[in-house]
Structure formats: C-alpha cells, structure tokens
Image (cartoon, rainbow, N blue to C red; front, side):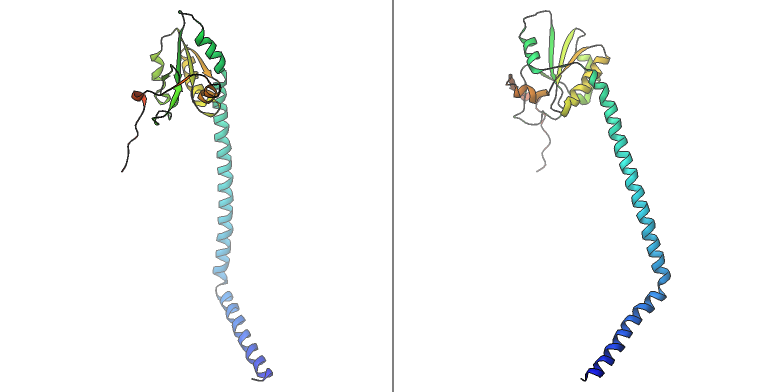
Length: 195
C-alpha cells in the first residue's frame, strides 16, 4: 500500500474513532454531568461521615478518660508492700486478696496469687455483700493500668469497704517472684467445645 493511501485510511479511521467518542459524549453529556455530580455529592457525604466518625471516636475516648479518672482515687499498694502486710502477724486483721480477672479462669494451667480468691467482676455490685465490713480487701487483675480491679475497688469503696488495688496486678506480683499457686480445679471454667 502506498504511503498516501495508508495516510488517507488512517485519517478516516482516526476521524471515525474520535467522532464516535465525541458523539457518545455529546449524546450522553447529561448523564455524564449527573454521574460527576453524584460522585461529588458522594465524596462530600464520605468526608462528612469520616468527620462524624472521628468526632465520635474522640468523644468516646474522652468519656472513657473522664470515667477512668474517678478510679484514680482508689488506694494502690505495691506487691512488696502487700507481701509485708501478709507476713505481719496480726490476728485482728481480716485480709482478703481477690482475683478480679474475668478471663483468667479458662486455662487449666492458670495461676493466681497464693491464697487469693476468685471475684467475678461481671457480677458486681452483687459481690460486695460477700465481704464483712472490717475486711481489708486487695484486688488484682491483668489489665493495663489495673482497669478492672480499679473499677471493682471503686464500687467497693462506694459501699464503705476498705479496699486497695495491687499496682501492676498479677504480672507485677509474678515479676517480683512472689508466691503464686495454680488455680484450683473447681474454679476453672470449662468453655464449651464444638467438635
């Protein structure tokens, strides 16, 4: 094919190709405008939704922070101080060490502070009545900043009980190489098995 003939066919083909798309664009320009407008509106809605989610997130964490501040008033003791208290021979003191973990009793190899009892935090405040008024109660858990034991201790303090939280919880107690014991078999909660 001669170069002149090739250029003629190429020009006609290009003209047909571009013309087809221009014609489609012209015919459907109204729909394209609607689609572009819809995408713009959707973008504004998405941005608004993201802003609402961000505000809700910060408000929720602000609420948690304000709620957690009241637990800072609860008296805290170090594991070493509690060990000294437990070693002190004083028959007049009724000392109770309680494990506030709600999730620490599902493993047959679980350990707890030696001589402690189980206190299910999800049953609060009904569990308050289980302690006589003259008890010295020391609570622990494995949460960050002792969240669960501080919450339970705050509820106990509202009832007028003498309550304290062990700083660092079970991890700090174990790290200090203080005595622990295996959770008794009768306290282990067996989760249902699905075979």
